[in-house]
Amino acid sequence: MRKLLVTGGAGFIGANFVYYWLREHLDDKVVVLDALTYAGNLPSLDGLKDNPNFHFIKGSIVDDALIEKILIDHDIDTIVNFAAESHVDRSISGPDIFIETNIVGTHNLLKAARQVWIENKETAKPHHRFHHVSTDEVYGELADDEEAFTEEHVYAPNSPYSASKASSDHLVRSYHHTFGLNVTTTNCSNNYGPYQYPEKLIPLFLTNILRNKALPVYGSGKNIRDWLYVDDHARGIDVILEKGKVGEIYNIGGNNEWTNIDIILLLCREMDRMFAEDPKLHQQYPDAAPANGKKSADLITYVEDRAGHDWRYAIDASKLENELGFTPQDTFETGIIKTIQWYMDNQKWWEPLLLD
Image (cartoon, rainbow, N blue to C red; front, top):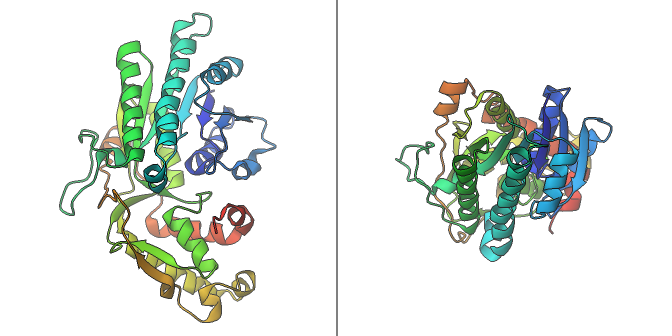
């Protein structure tokens, strides 16, 4: 039986991970620590209110005394660190909070874990695990004809966000090699699925279609990303916690590259299809373009490209497949249908989060 501290567990990927873990590991205990900043949303965890194995604490990973107390009070043996500022645009307009949370906060977690699990003989846990969740953006960008990122790829972050995550990755590595902390790190491609904050591409465009608002496409829309359904991300971390080698880095990817504009056009087609097949949606979302006889794609507008916009990310996840036997269960075609349906069914969740 594990006792997990999941930091950032009220955010998009963290919340999905907590649901997954408590569904798949019925005897384990999960404590969520989240500061509930703009992207941390406590209602995302409402489905766990009555689960006796779930406990929520509001707090920040920059509070090192709080982290140490949680590790001791709840007898934690595993940390899964999702806590991070993660929106590239926000890192360009205000990088300070990214340095504070992603670098200082991660270091505080590492310090507390070392103190409780290694230094303190009364609380030491030889079989502990510190799992750090990172991003493919630490590797920089790829040209169209370049091979996908492997775990050996040189770090070359291009935004304050990716630079802060790269820094935290190096800190995690150093605490293993210097202090003997049992760590693993994952660098993951773009996730999509339920509970994603509406400023991100897929939920932004879904909710904008439903409200008949413009679909702003950066530059040419030809930037390429590799996409992974969020439950597959949770499954990948599960496999690594169970079978992964301490000190190793594993890429988690979907083998699923799409240009931004192709994803947007797919979303538009699927939304138009759903409205054509279900007249009830016209009543639920009367402002939506397809509810008014228009095509969702007519809402597409091209806007000036953002600063530091990397051209292409692609993950080579063959190490995870070859060594630990993990492959994603969902294709993009199956995952995107589930995602669209979730947002259509959960207006009460996303509507209070809208910025306009």
